[in-house]
Length: 244
Ligand code: SF4
Ligand code: SF4
Image (cartoon, rainbow, N blue to C red; front, side):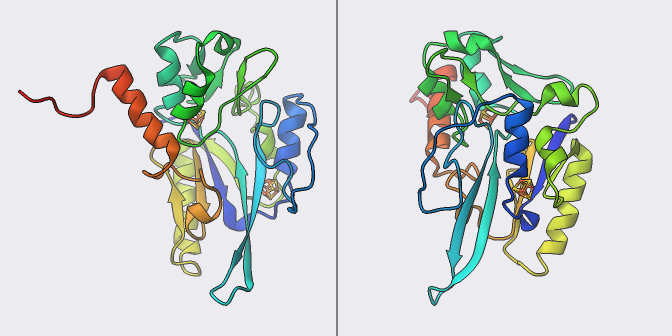
């Protein structure tokens, strides 16, 4: 498998939100009205006009003292076999596209004509798709395909000042991810790479991914994956064996 990938080294993230702002600027997305939720995080979730947001969580030690801040810059994972597209293709295989060169998954304006937004959202193991309430067009991170096709890095990667966000050929990013994993595991033995074989956004977690975000990885218990199984059953028939 070739194409492009991100490598996101969460051990280096400072939650400066430069990536979040750069995404807004490059994609000409407006600000949104938010309110204080008692957290530095803002906004609290991705939306039709926020393709990327930096989640922030405090982790306590076994005595209840704050042990660490965990930061998680969330975005579409550009899955190698994207359940969102597989679902949409049953209605219109030009509504969601997979770029042959980079592997980027992009939502087109034709997504507004798909019959059921919830079906697309629930197919995604990472709870990423959102829909514009007025136009009904579905939205998410585009991998900044317009930049990448002109030899530039995605805006979030270009803006990141700490080396958290990396982007390049998939083989190169996988090698970098494995190298950093080996280094980080010396200090954090539980460190892992999330869904590296099935996505183009490879996160390095210094502790259990679920501590960073409910939808950090496509665990078998996430609602998204359960819906993906339902989707496969719908598209390809029952997944259970029938009696002879
Ligand atoms: S993360 Fe979700 S929206 Fe993005 S490609 Fe995968 S299934 Fe589609
Ligand atoms: S720009 Fe880099 S360091 Fe800042 S929040 Fe985004 S990923 Fe983290």
